Image (cartoon, rainbow, N blue to C red; front, side, top):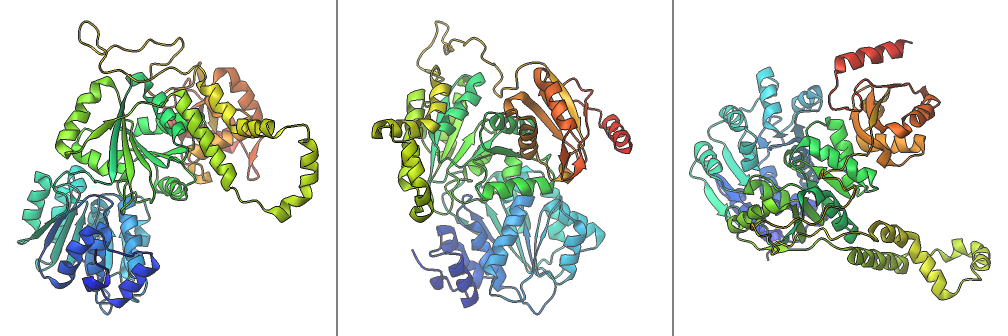
Length: 571
């Protein structure tokens, strides 16, 4: 593999790459950067997500910027705000030693005034989502007449999201002499049409071919009854204590419900989907990037542009309907030369989807069994022992306490002490899985009609793939909301802290700007209300009341709720 120096990159950018820890170019960078630096034509590059495409187009783009010209010279279009923000940050990092480079990110959900102000201050690179850029064009707030380079990143996803008309409108506002670079993970007929329509005799660069999966990713699947998918998910997480994963669901509602169910059961999880405000999305992603979250539950659209290092697993709680979506999902792991696992937890009826993905992606999906109690307990035990062996001991700080510790433990033998230390964490898993049943479906086991035999149902087991809290629910109104810094994870933690209850007693949480509704088990509702009536938040009195939705936060008349909230606030 060559070095970045051999690609003809200028010294200032090489210095920035060195600062970032970039040592050797990826294949897509090797194939595209020299041509984009020296050539004059267009390019359509097909490469998988996570292979270094941003640097592949970003470095040549920055080298073409004339810092003496305080106008928009380069335009990068991306499908989502997350990807837009990520590209902008990467370009700023690459340009760290190039004074005069000004990059502005333009996307919905953020202050349009700040974005206009950034452009007016002399931005020479704009990274934008199509919708927000159209808005700025209609306002006359941005001029694309001096653009010499236009990049369409994740072109297939922009088309899947219905941006073709917007792309046409935007590109018609740019000079016909510009260079257009198209980067895509898949080369669908729609992408080929857009390349033909917007580009002139574009050079095609393909690394891996259309729809081919990233070879750094292991593709696995487990088969359970549909109602057992949630239980199976928890077992896979418990069996991999170091897991750092993104869990994909099909709908926004299921994403939120799954994250809440995981949180209630003690897992460090949160959701990202289209119903969150930009502030909420940024807060969730900050926690995930900082590894303060183990599991990020996401929809396909919300996860576009998530570029987080060391994601160990992508878990498909629902398989997507399109092979392109599976490719994009899986590309969240196995990035930048690292390996990853793409795990599908499927019901019996979805086995044919796995076979179809195998044929289209030309990769093998390995069948794996849901871990049983013995496997989970063993892996947890070994992980705990590893942590004990690796912990750093501050001998000087702890020395003053050792006499008292030795005195208290004097009656315990070495073997008994080890057992007790291990049991501090181990007992929880022993209790949880002592009577756990096998969740795996034996596909070879058929009944006389040729159908897969279902495992016996356990008394009291839920049929719903995402369990809801048991018992009749009542709804509590509280005068705290998103403007107070709450997302659903923080609200659940706040509820547990004030009430002294665990998360299993709380159901749906519906946040508005200035107030929220929380579903609470009827058996503890009065207890929770009593605790909150005496509480305050940052010196402000907390107001609570019983909601009118009968424990169904999903079907509210918010005009009536807001009217009631304003009345309570005036009292």
